[in-house]
Image (cartoon, rainbow, N blue to C red; front, side):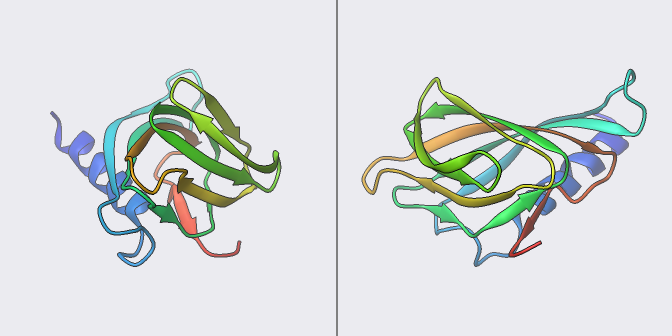
Amino acid sequence: MTIRRVAAMTAVALAIAGAPTVHAEGDKVTPVRSEKLPNVPGKSLTAVVVNYAPGGKSASHHHAGSVFAYVLSGSIRSENSATGPARVYKAGESFFEPPGSEHLVSENASTTEPASLLAVFVADDGALLTTFGKK
């Protein structure tokens, strides 16, 4: 792995993880891969896996660019300012967060079972991918 790729993945992990108080205890964000898009100069595609502990949740936040999320396991309750009211997505289902929207609810729908999702970002190269609190 090149130094540039390690640096990019470290930056992604720090950008997604946010402050330690934002995620519930036991939640984990793991960078998967980040690549510059050669056919879209100035943009990168970044994938992370978000694991929510039972009852885990994130504070209100927004993302740089567009986000496609695919639920890998369990059930995730999500509400986005641009896509309508809160809904529970089960393993195998997906949702989209358009640029400029706010992720109002992002949580494990279960208090007894863990849940995970794959989040794929398309954003400006080097962008801070997640910002918590109001825009």
